Length: 80
Length: 403
Image (tube, rainbow over all chains, first blue to last red; front, side, top):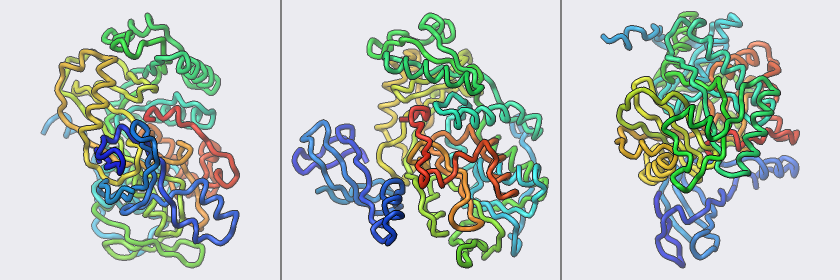
């Protein structure tokens, strides 16, 4: 993955962006509040496949983007 | 036959898996094979199967830049890696295999006052914990590495550096073969192209694994998987503080021998050494975004080449011969996880990220002791999975050299 298609700036090289982390889903299914907090702080879903994550366009419009990406082939599916 | 292939250690390959083993190890990389070797050699546990989805050392064990060092930033890590470094020094005598081990020393450059303070602290901490690391002036560095440009291409001036004199390299696949040979000769069964598709549990107790070659019962199961550890642990119902990031490396064409040291810059996050064949072996930081793709990228090549030629201008006239990537299990605090898990009988050795090769002897030794006795030896006890629950994380990102 070399380029991200920013909705404001257009396609820009990845060097302009800062990775902001995955949006975790699995921890929300944990009932015990302590265990859920522990999971939120330390654990990663780390999926092999489709994932939703945040990217910061640091050297562009300086806004946060939501990106859907397939981690098994490192390909962007959608940028919002 | 060449001298190289003639000195390969013999490996006994098992025909078909038995119905049950005392210990099943998932992953035939350095850590899995080293654990199998130590279970058999130190604890007399020979009912062990190592299951490798591809061929042995096909993952990160065969893809790293083969650097062995102990210049870490926290006491727990320095003591552990120093022990591993010393085991490497005796590994050829212990296993009888030629692993092309060579003590060269490693230099970590500093380009700012901030980095100088970090390296001074590192040297002091290393000496206090038994690792040999000393500060060097730019003049001393130039004497150690005549090819070094002290102005850093006018962009990254060298203010000094720490010199870890026991830093070494070894041929990485030969390390895996040495342990595979030693383990298989003692009765451990090794299986290549055998994929684990499930982990069997009876309540909170692990009972075996499902594989592409049928089910295998086991008293204990160890995940020694690399980048795919999240998927392996999920089969047992265990969630891990690990993300999978690609790390790239490349080698140039052969260069006359004469680059005597391992050179690295933690600020630039790049490192270079010369292989036994004379190729210059170059690595840098891991990709910021997680991915399971081993696709080599031009962006990595461009960024690594730019950085390393600031420090070593002679590299600019060389050609790139090969480029590759591995997928690294990077733990959230940049320290490994060698531990039992909430599932009885299921163990993990993971979080080896971009720093696992140097730890193969001590990691395997520690995991074998943990599985054999049920208690972690003192050297690996701090690296338990429980540390996150107890808020005793071992944050040491600055010592990875890849970030």
